[in-house]
Length: 142
Image (cartoon, rainbow, N blue to C red; front, top):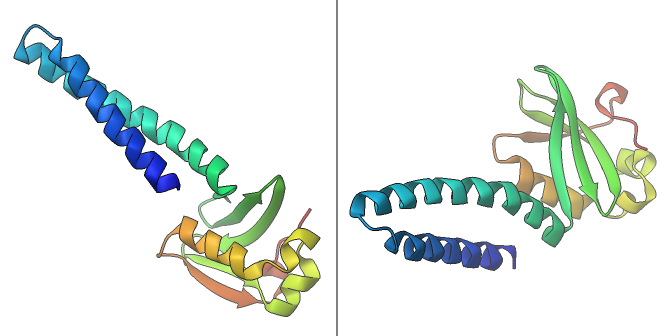
């Protein structure tokens, strides 16, 4: 659904910029309007598009931390889940199935597969996921 909305907005934006540009008196003015309008539309679409995606899909992820390591934060319907990662090795540490049930909040205990599928789709292919039971790789949850 998000893709169809995104494609409709992009086509509509391109059409509006093209039509408004046709009202310019000269070709030079039209080209300038189309260039500036296109760049402005792209910036606006990127800024607003991510917020719309979050509302439609109902979840999002982001990473916070330093150059060495940090937290991957997954948010869904006001709930938060945190996973530890090492930036240089591109490894995200995921509690093993037994540890997941032990340390994760109630809302996430039965949803490990869904949550991990969503996180994988958000972070990209260059990150590896490693099951762990080590305390230093498992973050406390709120």
